[in-house]
Image 1: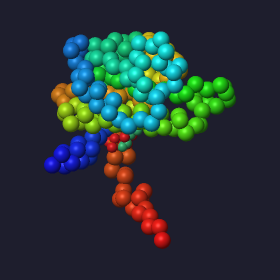
Image 2 (image 1 turned 60 degrees about the horizontal axis):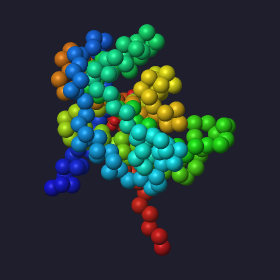
Image 3 (image 1 turned 90 degrees about the vertical axis):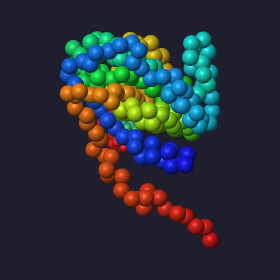
Image 4 (image 1 turned 90 degrees about the horizontal axis):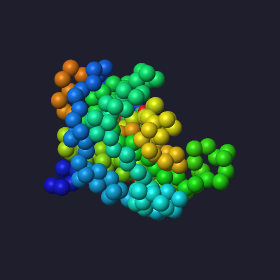
Length: 212
Ligand SMILES: Cc1cc2nc3c(=O)[nH]c(=O)nc-3n(C[C@H](O)[C@H](O)[C@H](O)COP(=O)(O)O)c2cc1C
């Protein structure tokens, strides 16, 4: 019975972008409950984040991810701050979202400036994988609670300007801007994803291996 419920929620989760050029009214009470955010903490993780992400920080949890949570009012204010510079769909979602979570992961600090965003190490791969699992937990919890959700790459929300505005340390990397929307969307448009129905059968990505 429990497995049935879980399987149903996993299948039900889907990308839903609620888009409107007119901002929805926002009250500061609209956000994600702690009980949903706590689900993320139950994701598996292999190693504690590097000490440089913990020492002297307000958020010093050992998990290799951080969530920065904006309620509806803050989403509208962020939209107002950015709309002169950005005309993408991100603005139309900041106009409707009840909550935005800026989900980051915590790469091990790198000595080599030529490494790109982060060093290609096993440790970093596992930090990133753990953070992805934390995000999925949250999206599933939202789905089970009837909250529309969308995992976005972030667009302008990835920029140093937005990191600074939200007080996100520059050593963290944005894994996704997670939008949470109301059920009642009035005149707004709900857009789904193009890839959802393209997954194909199990045989496209599973091979059962027998060892002789
Ligand atoms: C890391 C990550 C980043 C994503 N970024 C975007 C994005 O920027 N724009 C977008 O339309 N969808 C984005 N998506 C959502 C995917 O397009 C979507 O999950 C996929 O098409 C499957 O559809 P479904 O979520 O409805 O099952 C992202 C998903 C992941 C995991």
